Length: 442
Picture (tube, rainbow, N blue to C red):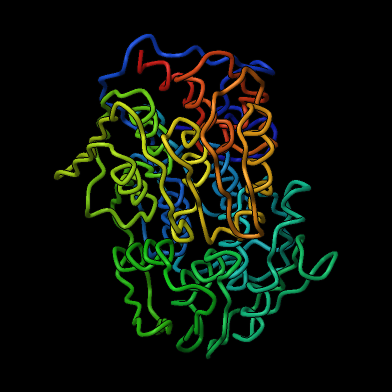
């Protein structure tokens, strides 16, 4: 068992989750349609929520089938620096966390979160419960990503937080001292992670926290958070965008993380674009993960999709059909759809995804640029992309340090020759073993 820390001399660092990658990787097309069962790693979204809640809980929590990748590493590293006992049993695929009942005794701690959006947005509300001060910072791209809506809501609840640099951007300084509570309006139009971070810390506020969520019609990731909190014994009262949490304690438990629906989308797409069949054990209609809706999009494109207890199965058609789809609620799969849209019989339009311009990269611009590099015509608006099918020409796709660009366009390369991926190692952010698992389709 390894204790997780960024402190030199201790035996678990971020490099432990990083395989070695070349600077550029050419994808070899599949010789025949695959027929495979693919076990994808645990959900990033669920893993990082489980880590936060377990750290705030009363007692020992065992997290089974977690994601081991950069994003979860940075959160474990931060928790250890805050004095929380976190250990990893890689042979059993478990993380053990000894929670401290919402108490954070460490003070004067600088926390680095890489480019992990969930970590950057989940930590500040939890840090407000501690003694402080704490700083939260990340890579240069993280300093470009929005955080003002979170800071504004924290201040409405009485938490002491300030910008350590430019207004509206990381780094942040959280002074600690607790969260008095009360009511706060919080916009989730740029990221629902603001709402989730506030909710998870809310049980330890001095009085009830009520969030008035604004900005979207659907909140699938907030649903994951609410389910997680209930699993650890804390109720959330929801009604018409209003979420209320009374003072409470999380109860430690054994918790199993289900497979990552976003990661599963690439293998579903591989079946779709090659006419093969892929089964994803561990996912079904009971999953709270909104990205499972991607299977429904593939059904609309002509795939046979079967969601049975404990499994999702996708079988591709002879030729995909183009679709028009609003992906606001499951936009992490937008790039996956874009990468296979050129093979359809008609155009594909993806709408209501303006917020993807604020993620690991400007995803709308990146997708349009790289499809153009491969000879595919697109039209974009501030919130949509229209993709016109055509013949893929050989080219090397730039990934902009974005794991989803690398994983999605690798699927393109399974169906046509000459597609390369620049900086394939960026997949370590959420899926270090991705390319090995992709090869298993052969």
